[in-house]
Image (cartoon, rainbow, N blue to C red; front, side):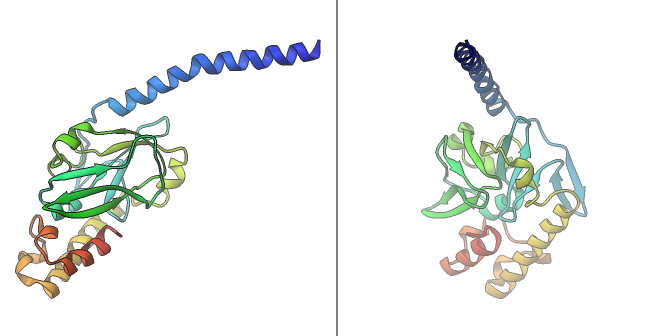
Length: 220
């Protein structure tokens, strides 16, 4: 009798899981496919940052959308360095990516730069609009230019390793100051007044300088 009870209990669990799984998958696809609303932009001494976004030191961002779904993109600083791109290649669907591991590659005129994932998890959706029009990640980095959605089971832990809140504007300003200082030393002609870099400078410099900039700001 006890064996029969165990079997019936096991069968009941399997039945519940069978009917629950499609609902969970549907919920995941719904979150991944939905359009991102325009973020609230907060302005700090000349720097605009989106509210409730967290930033990786390699200039990618993540937004927690609930149910362990993390929407990912690049920030405006990275977009300014790129200026214009020809293509973006994102990691394959259902691939497990680690925080700080390569997530995507942007290419312009045969020159490529890798960008790192701000979170760890399974890539469940990519932005097909970005694949068709790569410059969305440059022109609209915080809304329509998002890259992908990652199912991140350890998202709260991942967020502890990222930059959030009032520290973000100061970090952005510091990044601009650092790139300006580097250009003043390496190629003063590419630094604007005030030390701000010209748009698209990453692909206007020689290979050695480009490698130095990529290592400094994208950690690759």
